[in-house]
Image 1 (cartoon, rainbow, N blue to C red):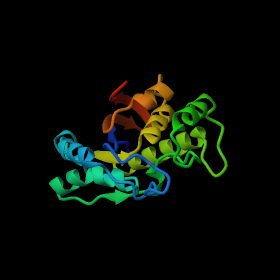
Image 2 (image 1 turned 180 degrees about the vertical axis):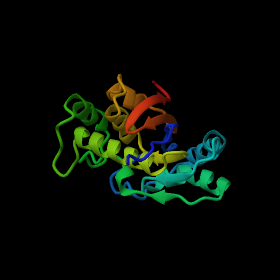
Image 3 (image 1 turned 120 degrees about the vertical axis):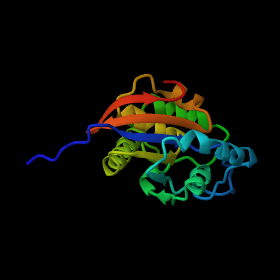
Length: 196
């Protein structure tokens, strides 16, 4: 007997974190880098945007800036924030540098390339698509809100077949940004958000 598939698609809301502190050498690592004051205000403003329809789950990257972005929503609906390591940002293999854009552009031009100790964009695309797909399968009949990061979200969109996602798209993605996906049986039916 074949299990019945839900007749409606899973609704996944990908949220890029709000304005965060700039990474600097000797500063907080990716796990501890926080939102700035403006980012904390932006996170409060996201509550109205993200609470309708009411999410059945709120899941976040383990990085503080992502958790802080989604925490006001969790408080408003009296629900927990679950963290998943697979939702973390791309490990570019770079230490904080003022020349990061040049290195990122090079990675987008050759997504199979990985720096020593880092992750290629192709590997991130595989990880991001698998992580989002797993959450869509886990919550097939409700809305799951996922707090993550710009490059992660861009690569998830690529993995689901969204065209036009490239270095310029990733670079122009606002903080915060909200992308609403409808996924049915592992297939993206619809995607809406900045730049799409």
